[in-house]
Structures are given as structure tokens and as C-alpha cells.
Image (cartoon, rainbow, N blue to C red; front, side, top):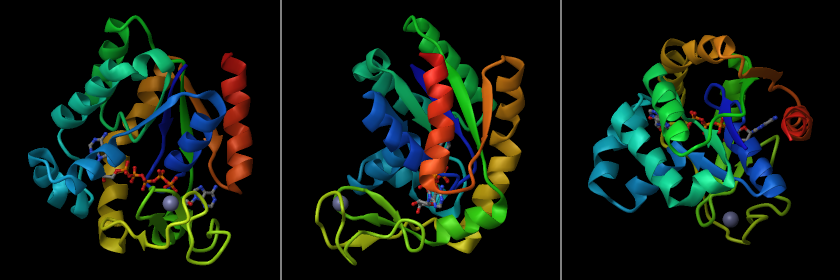
Length: 217
Ligand code: AP5
Ligand code: ZN
């Protein structure tokens, strides 16, 4: 089962991808997480992309396609993949098609998560992340059960992403509508697009996605 979660920044792609991983034992491939990991570990590529990411611009197709190809070869292709934040351009979508085809598999669905800009701003500006395990929370909609303690690992330090500010978010949204939204038409034409309302409680969105995924089995 290979599924793309497609949606603007803050649509809930990462949150729902983790739920699907727990439910179906598939692998989440988030290019954003991979790029942030490269930055943290101080690789050349990590240094190269840091300023671009902080501004909210897209890194090159070549870099992200390379990251995805590596992970598919490392075993992800055998387990099934939830693509989160990839593809983001038509060139990336074409590359993914070829990467999957050359490994004897393909896409089973592209789930578009529709969320209006006002809700995206609320979600992005309230997001915080466990500094140890990366679990994602929100000041209002998903606080930790015990204030200041990560539910997943018990750690007590949290971070906020450098690109989760109003100016970078404006750039991220502009890039989404210009470069990524054309993928909606691309996958619609291939009859792979399924669109859901991404507003509502996390569990409500989860149920909408589950309906689609169960229909694939
Ligand atoms: P990336 O990390 O992919 O960021 P993004 O697409 O902007 O998406 P987010 O992670 O911000 O949002 P999300 O949809 O995962 O939402 P989440 O579940 O966290 O990319 C970052 C950067 O890396 C890019 O700007 C670019 O520079 C680079 N990059 C990455 N991939 C690339 C590519 N393919 N090509 C080129 N460059 C690339 O939820 C957000 C918040 O809302 C959380 O706090 C969560 O708790 C809360 N929330 C979630 N669901 C709900 C709900 N239903 N109700 C209320 N709150 C909710
Ligand atoms: Zn944690």
C-alpha cells in the first residue's frame, strides 16, 4: 500500500501519517523530517538546505528525489509507504512514478487534505515538537497529557520549528499554491485522487482517511 498525503503546510499530513504507520505497519517517508535530520546531523546537504527551509522555499527536486530513492531502496518499498510532503512539484510526481514502477509497485491513492488558510495559520503557530522523539503537539488542539512532559517518551524539552513563523508560512503557502496544488489536477487525471475535509478533530480526519484506506484493501 503506497499512499500520498497531499496538502498545504499544517494540513495534518504528519499527524495522520503517524496514525497510519501505527495502524498498518507501513513506513512514513517525510522529506521535511529527512531534511531536518540532515540539518541536525550537520551534513553538507543539511547545511546547503538550511536557509532555504527557514525561508519557507522548496529545496531542489534533485535532493528530495534522491532522499526518497534511498529510503525506497533501504526497504521502505517492501513495507508500503505513506508519502508525507512529497511529491511537491510535477517533476517530483513524475520521478516518484518512475521510482515506484522500477521497483515493481505503484501508487494506490493520493489523499488530498483540504484545510482553509485561517485554520492552517492556527495549526502552524500552535505547533510544538518533543526535542527527544519528535512527537508533534499543539498548544490548543493536542497538548501533552501532563503539562511539559512528552506523552510518548517522558522528555521535558520541546522545540518550535524555525519555519513556523508568519513570514515563512506566507512563503510556504505561496509555494504550495504555485508548485504543489497542480498535483491535484495531475492525480485527478490519473484517477488516483481522493479528497477529504481536513478540518475537524484529529480523530474525525483519521476516520475519513481510514474509510479510504479500508476501501483499498
Ligand atoms: P515539511 O516538513 O513537509 O512541512 P509542511 O509541508 O509545511 O508541512 P507541515 O509539517 O508544516 O504540516 P503537516 O501537514 O505535516 O501538519 P502536522 O501534522 O504537523 O517541509 C518543511 C520544508 O522542507 C519545506 O518548506 C521545504 O523547504 C522542505 N521540503 C520538504 N519536502 C520537500 C519537497 N518534497 N520538495 C522541496 N522541498 C521540501 O499538523 C500541524 C499542527 O496542527 C500540529 O501541531 C498538529 O498537532 C495540529 N493538528 C493536526 N491535525 C489537526 C486537526 N485535525 N485539528 C487540529 N489540529 C491539528
Ligand atoms: Zn518525546
